[in-house]
Image 1 (spheres, rainbow, N blue to C red):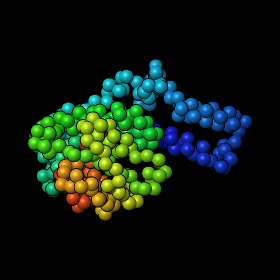
Image 2 (image 1 turned 120 degrees about the vertical axis):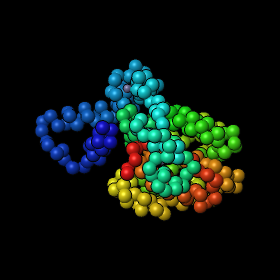
Image 3 (image 1 turned 90 degrees about the vertical axis):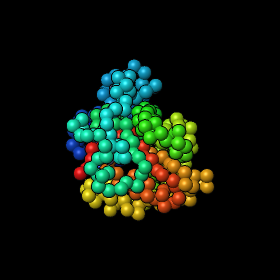
Image 4 (image 1 turned 180 degrees about the vertical axis):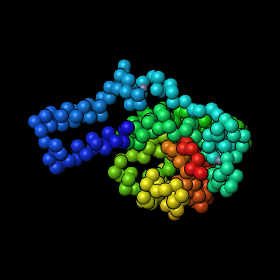
Amino acid sequence: MVPRSRGRQRRVLNSRAPARRPSARAPDRFTSRWRRAFGQLVFPQDCCLCERTLEDPLRSPVCPECAAGLCPLVVPTCPRCGLFLAPSVTPGLCGECRARRRPFRVAVAAAPYEGAFRRALLELKFRRREVLAELLARPAISAFRRASVDHGARAAGEFPAAVVAVPVPFWRGRRRGFNQAELLARPVAREFGIPLVRGVLRRRSRPPQTLVSPSARRRNVRGAFRAGPLPERLAGRPLLLVDDVFTTGSTVEAAVRALLRAGAGPVDVLTVARAPSSR
Ligand SMILES: [Zn+2]
Ligand SMILES: [Zn+2]
């Protein structure tokens, strides 16, 4: 798993303490591990998703087979929140969307958060593989294009006027040095020919959503986002909010509410992946 090996690597690089198990072979092992980690960072040899040897590692960290596997899942989804519905379920709004009003107009995801998509998103998040952002944005773009065609948004002039990325809290962004949602939002904006607007949405530090139980997530992100001021030309216009994963929806919903409070028109949500419903 990527985060685990990355964590190990960071611990080795940052460690000021003596090696945990000193032995005659320890320095060699340390050196070769460090060299391998450094080599992989600068010049990755294996596909970062399946570990097959890459023929052209400088071109892409993903082998052609894995790249081809990152395509949108075309099955019935909830027309409001994009939940992938089981074949046995009658197409229509999912239970949660029937039970409560969602703040977004529509949420679309390319695929369930599993397999190659999950591995690629973790690689992007923890190793800043920007080329993966391009690869992952493609299926999201086609999923959104299909959904917006379904809704006739372009024809009705209701297609989003700009893209906004879900921000990471300031300190986490500083530490990691980038925001994976923004890396994904760039190709989306470019493809749709609309601007990516930065700085309109800000996020305060809260415990990471992954450390909070699903039922506490909504409470955890309440008031976490502040939006505005929106550029004048975007007031009342539809926006497209981009994030990497739609988990329970609490994060994107809090961000959407902040944008609506700031005077945005209807907000659509586009994520690469969608976790199964938490209920
Ligand atoms: Zn591969
Ligand atoms: Zn739904």
